[in-house]
Length: 186
Image (cartoon, rainbow, N blue to C red; front, side, top):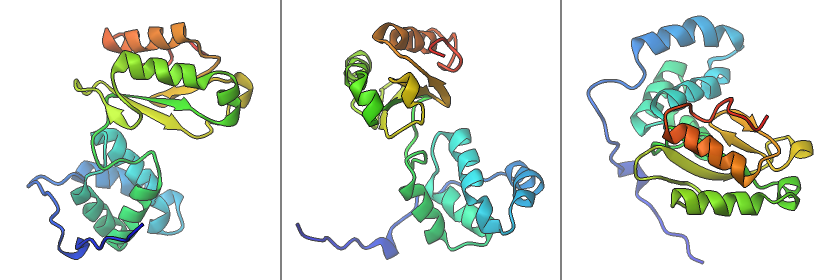
């Protein structure tokens, strides 16, 4: 294995004229998020969550804007985005399906669910369908081992899943009946 040097110091960041972090967002962060933390640095993850949920990703320009707002080095913001699986630098689907692959879910058949989602959606984990509707993830423990196998459809945990339940959740998203949140499986 060899290490390849990347000229990141001269990397070009795609920019748009309109800021990603709007004045309304910054006002909300100032009134609702910052008071919850002793330092501005403590607010980094909630601010990133807000941007991720608003735009379905955290653009590089937004990272620079967040760094400026929180008075942090931009590298700290990028380090956080690149470390945590929840944050992405490319847009994800409007419905993110995260199949748990922990040991409990493995024993209870998570692989069948993951394979079924691959076949049904036509994507591999960490890919998004061409229509932008679904992103499939294979995730580590979701903390519900006693109800395995489990998956997140967006931010809603669905437990004791079967292929039929997964099909119902996917169909609800496809027909516009919901994002998969709150639809059975609980």
